[in-house]
Image (tube, rainbow, N blue to C red):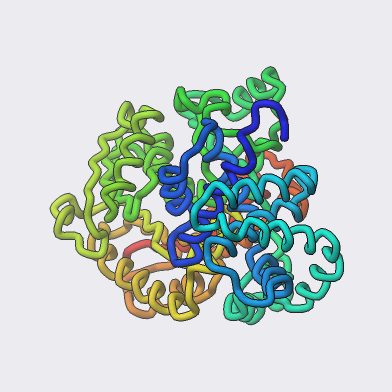
Length: 453
């Protein structure tokens, strides 16, 4: 363990407690928050270390399940299974000496009443894995759900939708996400910000019109200019939504499903004197919008009103209609951002795709009457499933005769499906003009633009 690092045993305990909650259906981020609050931690950086361990484990979930099934004659109790998974994940990652991982996993087992009696078992299983690692991993990876770390239904959907690209999508989904920033051009130019990073010795590349990729991940408090509102963490594909809505000075804009507020603030950066109504159904997530708007000083250039309401039921804000522009970042499977949230494939069910597509249709139908004639609506989802993207856009036009597809900037079609790319699999250097049409490093997004006749 490196100097200043938290005790690995503490981090393993928190990660294992979170893993248990996640495997019972909780989102991994929330499970980590809950575990960090309940497991005694003797080091201030335990929570961050536990998150790193749990995320790495989740990117190898199917392999870990297969390894434990091979190594244990009978399924261990859930707390023991979780600790074994964290220990095995660390052995696979090779971030610490093998003997240290085994020792710290046993220490973690002894420190918790739910695993204390199994400390010897944990020791034996981890040592057995080290003796047979190559053969065990090779046997497990004969199953494609293990190779691609996704449920079979997820793999089959991608295989059908993208016969030539499905393996590349799944490969990218298993990678750690790149750290991409949106530069607040109200406050600093992209080139000026890149020069500031260079002065600070931080390697970075422009990957979109206002998008900058930091070659090495770092906490937000260590990102130059973040606290002052010069930049936000936002994927380059996500940044296209506000850019392509083409807001003009003085327009009234509706940002539906607005959390965490990045697009709301970005809209305020793109034109003067906008009147923006941001709608978010989740009160806790709405608080994040307020925090982001304050940090970015978005209200200096726009009048922004936040409504905690269901965008599909415009009663709380319909009096503000009609709007010149509507941005709908709809709830979806999030199948395009799995590398940022590796728990997604394991928390979703195949039936969720149709249910979410229905919800998206309801939102589109509820918002369309709120748009002025000649106004524009941009629909976006962080999904790669066609049911939420191209097919959703086709059905919308079929239902609304007054909806005219409008070509997206730099494109001939009104729709664009971005598939996730990574630094290892795509060129990342970009000029401003090319980046505005299509960024070079991004998650999976679908965008569609419509104008009201």
